[in-house]
Image (tube, rainbow, N blue to C red; front, side):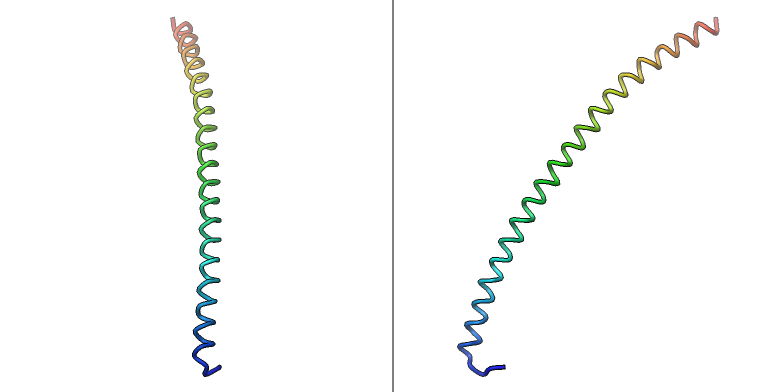
Length: 75
């Protein structure tokens, strides 16, 4: 609302400085969030891998014993 160009220029400069601060804050938060997501994803993958290995080993053992029982019953 003012006609004074110096005040307008000063306010634009102050706004740009403030905007730089918000950008750096946003970058900091997004970096931390991306790290957290990556760590949680790796934890989830490791958990699924351990769970799969446990169940698959057990599944093969029980599958073999079922085959031997069923073969024995057929004979």
